Figure 1 (cartoon, chains in turn green, cyan):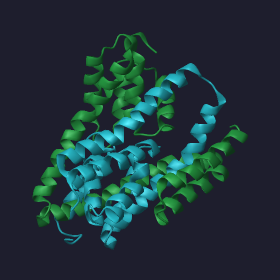
Figure 2 (cartoon, helix red, strand yellow):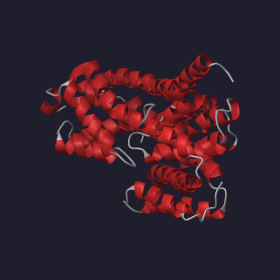
Figure 3 (tube, one colour):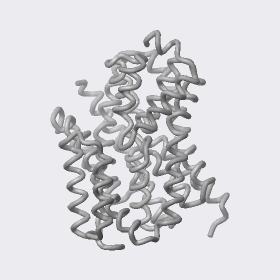
Length: 183
Length: 180
């Protein structure tokens, strides 16, 4: 933890995460790194990577978890609250506004035509995200990773089994396997 | 139609549970959100779901915004606020608590095992989300080409994904995909 982070107050945390949220069109993470590491010096580059991988192994969106962690290290629960409010407040208002516009004008043929295009492209973004995350795992340990990837995909995507039960089976198996064979 | 408070209660419970299962973010629980909102509760059609997801992707901010829109579609502004709060609060509290443990027990071996064990399952879940979205969004081959192109562009280049969405919207306006 840097001195800059220790000196950060809730108000600053709120404003910094607000600016991260609003610049993060199409992915917040690169902007978070730029603001927290390069501009503010709240985290070192290594801290950022380590904290992020921790946030990735917890439930919830990475960046939201990141705001909780950075806020908490700066000034406890007040810091976390300020950071997360800054991060999610404005996007929630904006997306409700967009939803209302869609509700009002969604029936127009022009809007319908544009939206079906955007929906198709958005599905492609998710494929790319999954592929990016799959690549390093398949390169480094395909044998232990691929069966769990495939099992989760078939159970949840194809068979549409309820998620809680699927995770209750797959997580313990996968973690136990990693525990027995430390990297 | 169920009374609003009953829907709000359903939203709170459903997203509250999903919040704690959303390893890798909201995209990991997207198939479950889809199953609940389309098949179980009939809040919307498959097409509505794809459209709302597209709006959530086009908006700035983290990717849990799809839950805000589902809540809004199911029960208006109160629904949006309840779904957002339910999707965020449990995982935020969990993170807040875990980080305290974490900072106390640096370099413990279970950290690595848990992280490494969760990763492949999470990736499989995100592929599931992609599959659900492709089935909802790609009603003809032209749309499937758009999906493949945007996946390829984002995977192989550093282009801001928003350009893919904007390009697809413009293509759509010309009418090449037809009108649903």
